Image 1 (cartoon, rainbow, N blue to C red):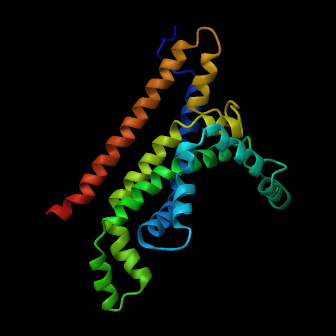
Image 2 (cartoon, rainbow, N blue to C red; image 1 turned 90 degrees about the vertical axis):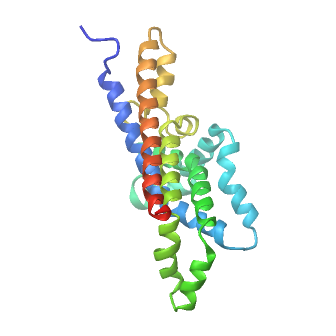
Image 3 (cartoon, rainbow, N blue to C red; image 1 turned 135 degrees about the horizontal axis):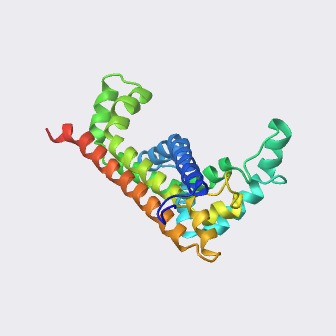
Length: 233
């Protein structure tokens, strides 16, 4: 006789898919997060306020709107979706890669904000001193700016992972809830709420999601403390 707290195969699949989607969303958007965070922290350019507003737009727009925009853009008849299908014979709508894309878009503002704040605290005098010694902009970025901002990069990546893990509105609008393909923890919980006797499954998946999120945050804090320890020594 199975325990009420024993995960079913479908729930295990949803958990594994959620971890994959969240990891791909966080890691895949990291280079763009570093670039945008650096631009907003270090550069002055026309339209900077507009770029900043666009980056943070997913935080204030309903997630369903973001999902619909992605569906219109990356769907089979959308401008990007039709191009992907015609040239590569593939697409992202109603696939797990689409769930990763939607999760990345929703988590991107949190990543950029953490990275930007970390880069703003990097002492400009160190970069200027390196420049006077003949270091190129790329070398300054790779050897000074990036290492000193690394705690913020770690924190931003983990925040993005945790956000992507729990994303629901944008993903279900863009990729639906297909068991084994796009049904993440959040989508599975929503489905269980629609059927009788689904409360036990809701509790199981909810506790798993809570545990994963807390573990990610604890690991992030531990890494940040370890990375900052040399600065205090």
